[in-house]
Length: 431
Image 1: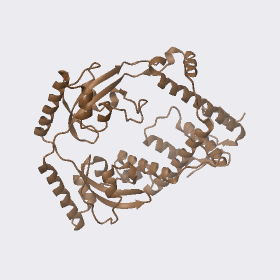
Image 2: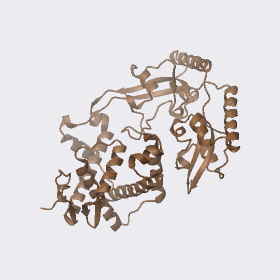
Image 3: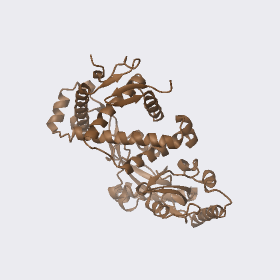
Image 4: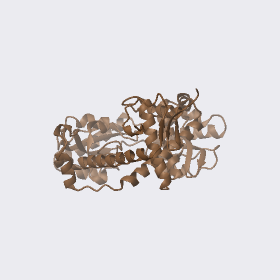
């Protein structure tokens, strides 16, 4: 049997192939199944059908551009993850165009469901007494453990790049441009051989469809002004290094292009000179001639922290501390984590070398501003974390109640062989 209907929810059918496709996507994203996937996935799809049906009634929709942006980001990430377009097609046993269409439908439905959930729940308003009352009734040993966190300030200096080095890089990129424009070499071949952007080099420099806001301004301004896919841009300097760009395709407010990135090499001599300059700053701070905060504000090359007296901010969107100065040790860049590990609050490190998130080699000193040890969650230290927990609990309660009510008024049929499950919501099977 090529396919079969395994569930019917209202007037919507769930096919065996729907379940298999969802299982492959979840597996590709590293999600683990807490139970039988052939029980878990159909129930998840059925719940989604309930939300989508209500969204139709309430005329809830999402913008096409928002869907396409998410699809392009996922396709680019998936290609990087499996090691190429061909391998992605092999994994799903489908052409890339089919994968994109499937993913587009999935993303649109996911986004509509999220909007529907927001409407059903509304804005949850909690007072401090609500949060206190909730946690007074929770057994202490079931409160979450809050991992140890640190707050770190940083000062960095960038080594001077000799003019000879930048001139040599520009000459090499001009040579690449000439080879492409003369038809001697393909841009994609040169990107695979020489580009220092590992994420795109393996794909011949191809970046995938992105919007202007996803690119640094200097790169975006040149890329979005390209019109001839056969020509190569002038050299573009960004914080990542030096690029040349080739247009592949424009689609509305998004663009797909190839690029070759070359980064200037920093010699040991320049690194030693930068280290000596920073060591002098460190000595002045230790002698009380200069505060760490002033050094960060007026001397640091780190533009992300110098307006904040050197204080680093957590940009990991998967972290519960995102947008705050708190970092769990594994969330810090490895070079910084190794230095901070043995420090006490108020300690300042000696100069050390590190790679920035732009893959530039710099020298740095750090100050440990604060350290909070691992502990059981409490209202005094972790109010915001606990408030979020109560909001999530309240939200889940409201949505679970809504699903239970919908089950009672929605026609559901489950095929033989798919019913013997320990469902999260047992009301699917009417007694």
